[in-house]
Image (cartoon, rainbow, N blue to C red):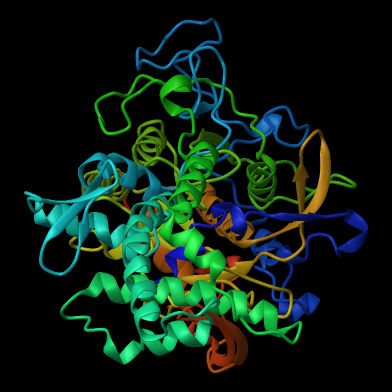
Amino acid sequence: MKKVLSLVCGAMLAGMPLFAQESQVKNNWQNGSLEQDGVYGAEIDRALDFLKGKKAKHRPVVALIGAGIDLEHEALKDNLWTNPKEKADGKDNDKNGLVDDIHGWNFIGGKDGSVMERSMMEGDREWLRLKDKYADLIFDGKDFYKYENGNRVKVVPPADKAEYDYFMRLLREQNSRLGSTYAGYVFANENCRYGKIFFDRMRQMFPGKEKYSYDDFKAANPVESIDIKRDSLEAIAYSMISMHMGMYEGMLKQRGKKLDDLSFFFDYYENGKNIAKAKDNWEKAKNASGDDGRREIVGDDPYDINDRVYGNNVHLLSNSTGGTLAAGVIAGKRGVEGRNNPICENAEIMTLNVINTAGEPCLKDMALAIRYAVEHGADVILCGLRQTVYPAAQRAWVEESLKLAEEKGVLVIFTVTEYSVDLGEYTFYPNRDMTTPGLTNLMVVAPSDEKGNPFLKSDFGDEEVDLFAPASNVFSTYMGDAYRAGSGAFVSGAVVAGVAALIKAYYPSLTGSQIRALLNENVTSREGVEVEKMFLSGRDLKQDVYLFDELCLSGGIVNAYKAVIAADALAKQGGGAHR
């Protein structure tokens, strides 16, 4: 992982749908084909023509792990999964500890019906977990120090070096904005200490001056005179103070002036105003995102996987637009005038909430949501939430749930983020290689448009992404019995989940691993086609031309028609295994 994490720490829901009005789109293009309709759809209409006369043998269950759906939407209410062992009577009828989990469960809710509005970033959660141990330590390459009552004090090195190194990686790789802000506060003491040293050198070199300039500062403290091996902290302090002055001088240059009076900087660093400012920045950051209310609202221990009885059955959240759209792409009644045309009419939607308006899901919630879906009969699981920080203990919980899904024949679909990341260089979780041997039932899907082009900003990887799928202006269900078009990576996952559910409906003996193989081996091929793509280089976004097969494993776009024909042939050969 590199500094892509500074981007990842932005809104995780960037891949969720952006909605447009109906008049702006051609309805249901995602169901079409290049041959019949001139668009790179998923060839769903052709698949349905092939299946005419065949009887669906199974009503597939698709679990949506995300931010909930509008359960009362007119086009969805007949396609909701219902827990056969539970009643809406305020009792835990199925004895699983979850009261009235009729259509799924909300893992970010409280017993009183309240819901967490946002989740923290995983990097911030980890940094806070270890803050009291390591956040105040300063290392100069040889010894450890901390400030006590404004005085620099030498302290013993951390007893657990591996844990300390992990903590520092959270900062170096910019996984925690909270941690970076607090580190700025801690290091402000060093800037104050070294600022006095730098200014004293300058005064000794240029004694008796009434005003000192930025040029004087640089002449008295040349970069080449700083011995990083001797004192790395001096180099860091010099860089930060010099950068501060340089930015100020840049503003003056726009007005035709130079920085020829350092009075502000003397006052700022020598009198400790920089420390007060850094502390204020930290307090603001802590108040803004240092607590997501989980302890007060949910009340569980997020680091204890055995603490499983928590949450509520509230499914309509502030950010349920994405889940509502996905549900409408996958399931519901086809051919109704003015409505969406879902892929698998008889599919049932199970909803499992792990996140709301912002942040990243708690990995315990993710693990338990996957496990809930598997244990309650889901055939397909769709989740658009991938992230880069996966602490070892919590990662093991997710791995166990994904292995269970593989054993039970469940297909698990994740969608990429839209940060232009080459996934061969940056690791996001979950992924197929997080277990040994690798997972055969886990798909990673990326978005494409009507012309068969990848979204410019979507992540990509010739081994890490399975295939692309329609995700631009897809018409579907919206909150409050409305219908609109949405775009985004999560839409591509919904299309693939719908196709997988369609296969499962007619060929229920096929496992998730087999369906993944069928989908990858029967795409609309774009192999050898040059397409434009943005990619992250360091901290900069650049654009270049790629071959489509350099962007995903299959080299193409999901094709329901080809996949259904292949599934039919495999089933006739006796392929597939009953769960």
